[in-house]
Length: 487
Image (cartoon, rainbow, N blue to C red; front, side):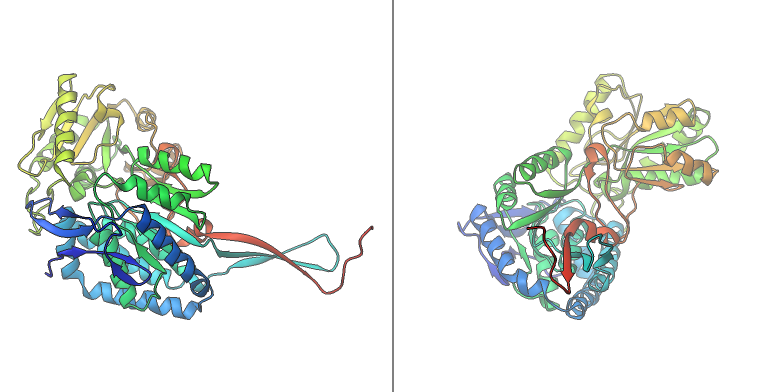
């Protein structure tokens, strides 16, 4: 694998240093070695990127659907050919294991190929008018410059999702990746699309040092040339972005955190339920917004389910993310590791029962299961990124739904039952943007309307719904003859 030693910004089709000349070191979360030296941009770089995107907008918005299609198809083929390298980059930059790397790669290849057809989707409709002699149209057109702010945890997918659909619809984009994933969540996408023929300025990437995201993001949101914001990240940050965007009368598409429940009913096939729960809780070391944080089990099957679940969780391979056998790799940084340890310790001190795990193992946090977590413990109400899950007992299906909804979040949920029709009835009762019946909460596809409700966000990502978020409707009328006016 080619080791990435320098990550520069991509502005106006050029690789450039930060305006202030600063850099920072991004370290491998497993080895602690320097993965890359990264340009530490600031507000000046953000403004330069918006200028480049604004200049590129007229030509790109007016480009032929066939030209956009060919660029995205070439990018999809190129990404498919680079799988081994990308797996290595994801492991070294974000601690991503082989399985979740393949999940990301498969998603992004499909994303590019599906988005390639967006230019041929219907762009409007004919409307009836009560004014004689008038023809009326509602026409969708690109919003303009889009500010895309992406996190580190599924860096390839979440950066790709943030930029591909807006670009396919004729917008230009400024992407701000996380400081924890400046390459796979930023520069890699700029290189991939540039090499596929994307014109200069259509996609720009601004990187920044740890702790300096705010100045870059606020500059992007406040700039009058930026007309839409797409953000994936924490609810705390999403609320701040929504407040700033609101002051500037800009729409923000927000996909935020989750405290996702997985309900296991008494008629569920237990082996399948255990397999689903272990995957949903511990895939990518529990570091996705979709992971099951609470497993709510009907009382009649809780003893058997808990015994099987804890046994399987405790046996998951932990360690080097570059080892294909590893399931639980390192968490992203030392701060995340210490937060996991502190929150587990707090829950136990408040009376929770620790069934397995609970203490760091080097740079990893082993699969951890707790039961009886009191409601005042942070694990019980706040999103905790890592391989930690809570077991909770419910009297019956209705009690399980009540407990599942006892949160301010509403991103994803799962229901395991022997009766899928009953599961679908219960799904309609859950206050969540996504519900999977007879599956766990971690699943997404490029064409699906992914997003949450309540504190988990507003708006939907997904190729099939992108036009609703990243185009504007313009009403156009035309007449053959002049109107007659009363004065």
